[in-house]
Image 1: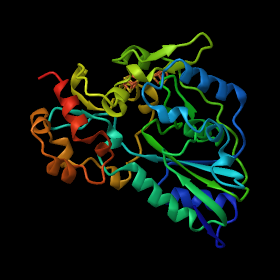
Image 2: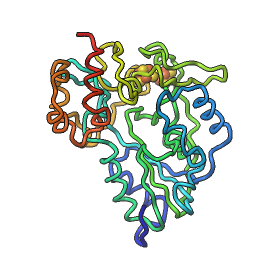
Image 3: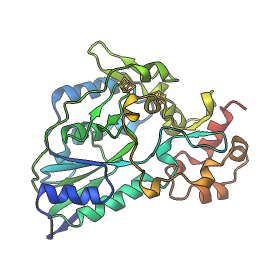
Image 4: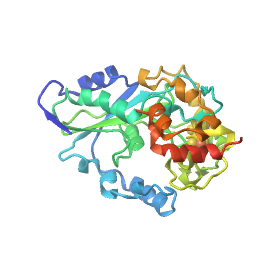
Length: 309
Ligand code: SF4
Ligand code: SF4
């Protein structure tokens, strides 16, 4: 959180700074309470256990529903989308498949650094959020006109695709809001058919619900038990299938990723055998400033044990 009195009072100047900081899309929304239908749907999702063991998603419900509780006097939210993959092809040398966002530097650190710099040039109080705050980032991205949510539950930026990471600046200054996105994906259904865990379920109201308990991103990253489960097609950490099959990622050349997100050779070249024999010292060195360290060495070894030998 910062407080300063300098340069940037108007929406266009703030958006220009965010784009100069590397975002491919940016928009602004008024920091209001979310509509009841969104909070009720979220409560049903939690009540049905779809968050698995991610108990933190069941905390701070009031804050999650009203971003003004994240920052006293908050009036606007600036939502930015940053690119992290230049193609849908999965680069791999060691035969393992890693979620694309995780192959470079930890996005929490990278995006916070970039947006803190912008926030430092804004008037009023600000709070930069990168994934960890109880903020419904994708809904705010829609409200800010940055993109729409596809049936794959991913935020899709028109003509850019879904290989983007979101970050926000909540601010006490009032900035002119953008029109919310009214777009939708083309509803081709490919993500539902291709999902290896059958984690995407069509609901009677036309929405598609993600059941984290069946999602390989959850099972390989967020799950906190030692049970070895079969992980199809060498997915060692995360899963990008519902993005890699989506036509919105083929519409136009994907934007170049931020240089910090370029895949690290030392991660790409790891094999299953390397992981099974890896020491804590090697793990700490290879995954320094990487989002993958979240799963710890024990989690990577558990996942490696579940891969086809
Ligand atoms: S990340 Fe993979 S497992 Fe999870 S919903 Fe998408 S395709 Fe299914
Ligand atoms: S794969 Fe098809 S149904 Fe799924 S999000 Fe993309 S356009 Fe929508």
